[in-house]
Length: 407
Image (cartoon, rainbow, N blue to C red):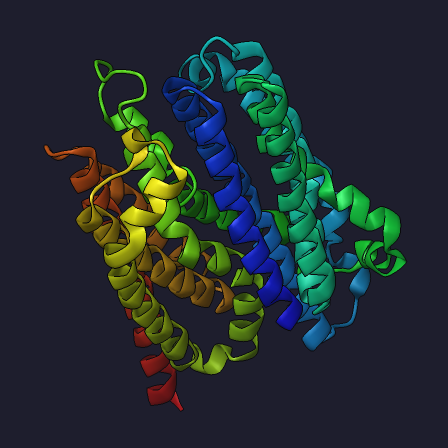
C-alpha cells in the first residue's frame, strides 16, 4: 500500500500541474473550454469506474470464498467489449448535443477523441479492477502514475511549442491507453484477464450497470462539476466567466478526492472483508476525512490565495474565504464515497445507486439558487453529497441492527 500512497501523491501533483500548464498556455475562454471538456470526459469515465468497482468486488468475493461450478461465472474482461461498444456508440450518437457546448470550434475533433478515449478507458477500468482484486497494489500504482505522467508530459510539450486547445483535448484522453502498456510489460497482469467473478455474466452485467449509474453520479459531482456549473449558469454568461470558480473548485477538492478515488478499490476490498460490521468499519475513514477537510480548510484560508497568485493569472484567483469553504465542502463528497463503497461491498447495489442519485439531484438543485458561482458551488458541494451519505449510512445501520436482533 506504500506504493499506492506515493502514486496517489504523484497523481494529485500531476493533476495540479496539468491545470497550471493549461491556465498558462491557453486564453481564459479556451482554458474554461478545456476544463469543461476535462470534466465531462472524467465524469463519463467515472461512470465506467462502476465496472472497475464491480470487477474488484466480484473477483475479490470469488477469490475469498471460491465456489464450485466456475464455468457459469463471468469473466469480466471478456464482457468489457460490450460495455466499451455501447458507451462509445452512445457518446457518438449524443455528440451533436454536447459537443457544441463542451468543445466549441472543435466539435468533430472533440467528439472523435472523446469516443476513442471512452472505448479505451472501459478496458482500463476492468484491468484496474482485476489488479485490485489480486492485491497487486504496486502494479495499480504504476498504472495510475503512468496515466498521469503521460498527460502532464504532453501538456508541457504543448505549452512549450505553442499548441492550442486541440492538444489539451488530446491530453485529456491519452492516458486511457495506459492499460495496454501495463499488459505488454507485465505477464502477471495478463494472467489476471481470465479471472472469474462470483456471479454469472447476466448478474455481473446487471450489477455493473447499477454500479455504473452510481459511479456516474459520483463522477458528475466530482470531476464533472464544471459541466454542472456551466449548464446551470445560464446561456447569457460570458465565455471565461466561470474560469476562476472552476479552478478554485478543482484545486481545493484534489487533495482529498484524488486520493479517495485511487484508494476506493482498496476501500471496497476492506468493506467486502468486513461486511458483517460495515458501519463500524466505515467510522475511522469517515472521521479521518472530516479531520482532513477541516485542517485543509484552515490551510486554504491562510495560504491558498498567496499560492494561487504565484502560479495562476490574477483573473483565476478567488478570495481566501471561498477557498476555505470549498475545501471543507469537498469533505462531503469524500464521505459519500466512503458510504457508497460500504453499500456496494454489502451487496446493496440499489442503495449505492440511490445515495448517489439523491446526492446529484440535491447538488444540481442547490446550484440553481441565486448567488455568485462560489456561493452556489459551496452549497451544492457541501450539502448535496451529505444528503446522499446520510441516506446510505442510515439504511446500512438499520440493516445491521435488524441482523443483530435476528441473531
